[in-house]
Image (cartoon, rainbow, N blue to C red; front, side, top):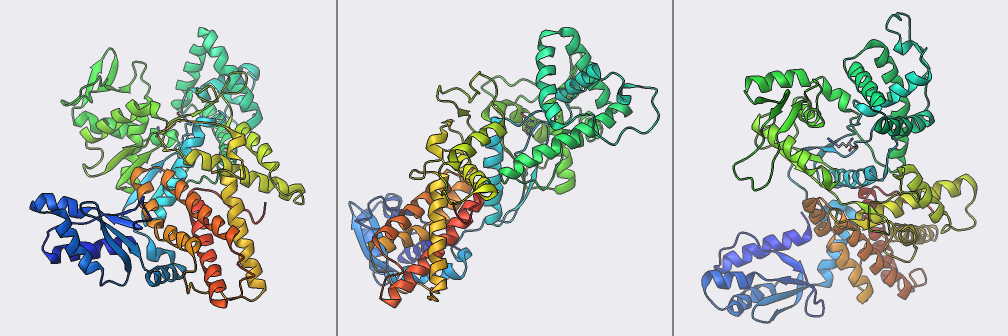
Length: 582
Ligand code: ARG
C-alpha cells in the first residue's frame, strides 16, 4: 500500500475514533505548499453532516495529528481546511522503503484479467498514423495495468479477412492470370515462395483501391473474389497465406519499432470460425430479425435518447459485417480466456460500432453481466491546419514515413561522436520517445497537432528531454560507482531542492492510479516530467560528487538512484526505451 493511502487509512481511523463517522478520507496534494504539502478537506463535509462548526472538528483532528511524528506544521486554514506537511524523518523512511522496493509505495488494483484490443492493423495495407495512437496508448495501458497487478492479454486483432485482401488478389490475378492460385482445376502443390513482396503489396493495394472507386465492374470482381476466399477456396487460401505471411512480418517489424507487443496475434480470420455457432446460439435466443433481406439484431434500449440503428449481423449478400466479427470475437475470447474486462482502443469515430456490439453481446448474454466491455476512444493527431494529419499532397501518411521523419529530426540532436550504426539505432530510440511521449501527454480524448520540431526539442516537455536527463542520472551514478562511493540509503533532507524531489517521489502512486482510472497516460506523462524537472533543478544547484559531507553526498546519490529507477519504470510503462547515451 502506498504511504499516502496508509496515511489516509490512519486519518479515517482517527476521525472515527474522535466520534465522526466517515468511510474514507482523501488527502490532496496542496496547491499552496507554503501553507502545507497536503490538504485534508473532510472537516467541511463532516460539519455539514453533523451540523456543527468545521473549525471545531478540524481542531480535534489537528490535536491528534500534532502527536504523530510523521507530520509537521499541521494547521487549519480558512474555516476548516487542514494543512499537513511531512516530517523529514518520515520522508527519509519512505525513500528508503522505496529504495528497497518501489512496490512499497504503489497501490495495486484488484486481481483481474483484462484483454486489450489495440492493434487493428490491416493486412496488405500500410499502417497509417491512425494506428499509431492505438498502439501507443494501448501498449502503455497494458504495461500500466500489469504494473498494478492486473493480468493482461493483448490481441493484435489484425484486419485480415476483408475486401482489401480481395482487392489485392484481384490485382495480382489481373497482372499474373496464369498463377495456379486462380486455376480451379489445379491440383498440384502451390509454390512455397510468395508471388508478392511487401513492397508489391504497398503498391498493389492503393492501385486496386483507387481503381475500384472508379470502375464498378472492377469493384464487383473484387467483391466476388473476396467472397470466394472467405468461403475458403483452396487456391485463394494458398495465396491468402502468402499475403498474410509477408504482410504480418512487416506489421510486426513496425510494431516492434514502437515497442508495441501482443501476446495473441489473432486476426478477424480467427474469429470467423465462431460465427456459425454464435448465429445458432442467437437463433435459439430468438434475437435475430429479418430486414430487407438482411439479418439484424435490434439493440435499442428504452432509455435511448438518440438514434440507435440495429446491428447488421448478416448482410443481404450473405456476408458477415464488421460488427458480426467483433461479436464473434467476444464469443471466442470469453470461451478461451474468460476475461473480467475487454478494452478496445480506436479513435472516437468507431464509438457507435462498439456501442452496438456491446449491447448485442449483453442482450444475448454472450458475456456475463459482470464482464466489462469498455471502449476507450482517443482523439486524432492533426496537422498544423487542425485537420487529421496528411502528407504534403493530401494523402494518408504511412506510419513508417512519419517515424522516418521523426528519426531524421532527432538524429540532429545526438552527440557528434556517436557514429555509424549506433547513431542510427540511438536516433531511432530517441525518435520513438519523441513521438510516443507527445502522443501520451494530452488526455487521450483530446486531438493534438503533430509538430516534430517541438516533440524532439531537448529543452521542452519532450521525450528526448526525459531521456537526456535520465541518461545523465545514470552516468552520475556510474561515476560514483567507479569512485567507490556509497549510496545505499537516504540519510538526510538537506535543502528545499532535495525535499521537493522526495515529495514528488512520495506522490508516484497518485499518478499511476489516476492514469489507470482515467485510462489515459497524461497523468504519468506529467508526473515524470515534474519529477525529472525537480531533479534537474537540484542537479544544477548542487555539485553532488564534489560534496564533502559524506552523509549529504551519499543521500543525494541514493536519491538519484531512486529517481533513476522510477524514471526507468515509468518510461517502460509508456513504452519508451532509454538508450545508454545520446
Ligand atoms: N482494423 C480496424 C481499422 O483499421 C481496427 C480494428 C479495431 N478493433 C476491433 N476489435 N474492431 O479500422
